[in-house]
Image (cartoon, rainbow, N blue to C red; front, top):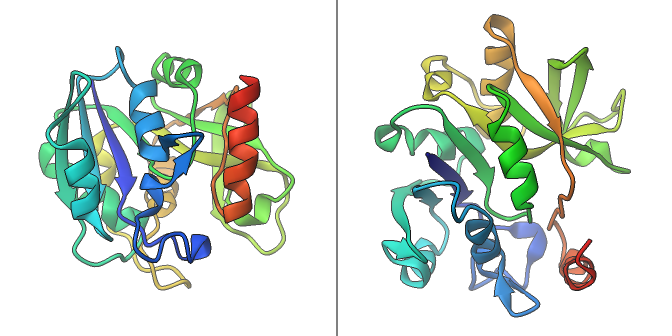
Length: 225
């Protein structure tokens, strides 16, 4: 099993912490964000494909080609033009259905196991600020629509940035969004027009968007909740 971790972004909302350091290398309680994510994958995946760009050599220096028994492969996004473009850089290395994971949030091993038990699927959670994320609409056990960062969300169920999908998702062409980026969620919207997508409710997802989130994440991890 392979996992693609998107770790190429500039993390502009985390500045000045990310002025010289990529967001996935920021520490929470003495452990880097990306280190936490890869450790949650231990015993589940054989290979992690890290999509890197901004300060990518620092990530490569930190994890090299193997981290605690997991093979690490690097795919480079030369220009930070969105998560859709970043994810597609991993395509040449993919062998079949795999996990796609944001590299700058914290996830739980229990959720990774749950999402792998339902294919194809997306991990979701409720939030008080759905306008910051991709809002999900469901029917029964399926996702029927997804809208990236809507100004007026119709619900509070959102994508948390973890998917179990086939690389065939990249067969479709997408255009830059109004934000001027290629959004991975636009690939998901193409998928929904042709195929089924199940959803799995997250047990614990800790988004890391602002410097204040680092303190909250440290508190949550310390409590073990």
